[in-house]
Image (tube, rainbow, N blue to C red; front, side):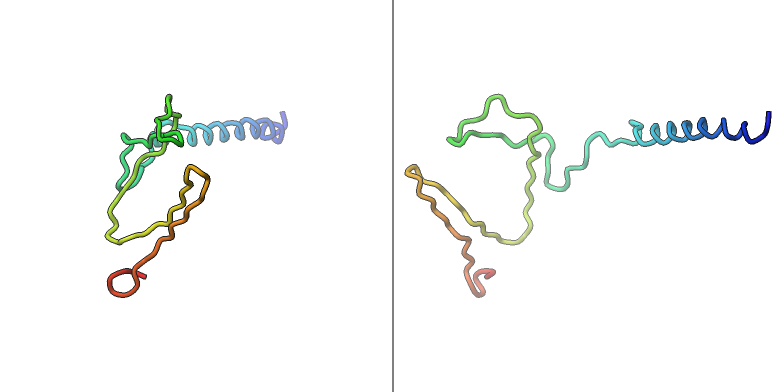
Length: 105
């Protein structure tokens, strides 16, 4: 048997073996993290709760609710608010910061 045919027949086998090793290494349970680190101030045991527009709890709760997180940053904050009244009027309350030394604006 000529030498080049032996090499040629081994190449597909070696390529298949390398592919199998790469697949096993990337899908190994030992390398996979079971739960990602949620970060500071987050508690995986506490999940957000879904409500209807009127405030009633959604039953059953959907799967995959986000994790609740909250931390004190040491800085004050303000947020704008948009609300809709029962007659359909839209009310916008801008986030107003007190200017000067008393505020941050």
